[in-house]
Length: 310
Image 1 (cartoon, rainbow, N blue to C red):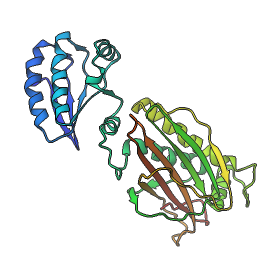
Image 2: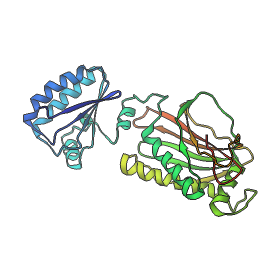
Image 3: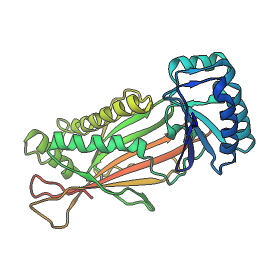
Image 4: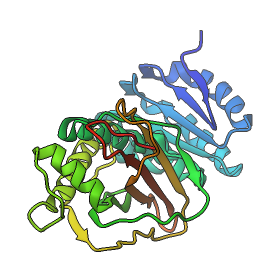
């Protein structure tokens, strides 16, 4: 029975390693690695989640496999190395051989395999969950995300107030902006504080930044703790104007993430829009840059507590 388990996952080969990699497993590794190298797959990732020990004489087959892949313009990365193994690999000068990464997505980006039109589910999902929870708790608004899609052209949206946060990490830079038309913002604010404001003023506009701050805080915690993205703390800025224009810097695609929530009181065509803009570009190793912009498009009804978001 093989001590290594190979599993094809989309466009990569995930190799699960045994608890102990020793001289006894070397011959098996050599035979398996020849077959792996012949696979029409560009990316090979070793998962060391269960591995506690690598014997000194068991490193050479990894070096040879890395060289085979390099000759064919293929890539090798390592995932879930514990600290002791990582320090041993660094001490032996083999870090460039094992290429440790924090996530599958990071490996794809470093290998240049992240296509422009791809929707990065791993990165976006925490923001989806945080947006749903924040609107539910803060504004008593239940929403459900629909199928995301790539936007093919610019669509003009009226934006009167926006909260902006700059994204800073060891792996990427970018921004996240929560944008509202004035009446949409007022509806949300009034539901949050049980008030009847009819005009945005300096006393209430900070709520746009606070909502974004809550969404970002929840998303950052999950991405940092579970995914290793190393997002830094950030303070939101609030912008207001009669007609704000939010533009993406870079040439990346726009991913639209629609939401829906049934208004039980009014099924008529909805009138107001809430635009949630989320953009980032990965910088794993200069000069590779993969910019992405995500827009959450939401609409609400003026007639009651329920919201419809499309």
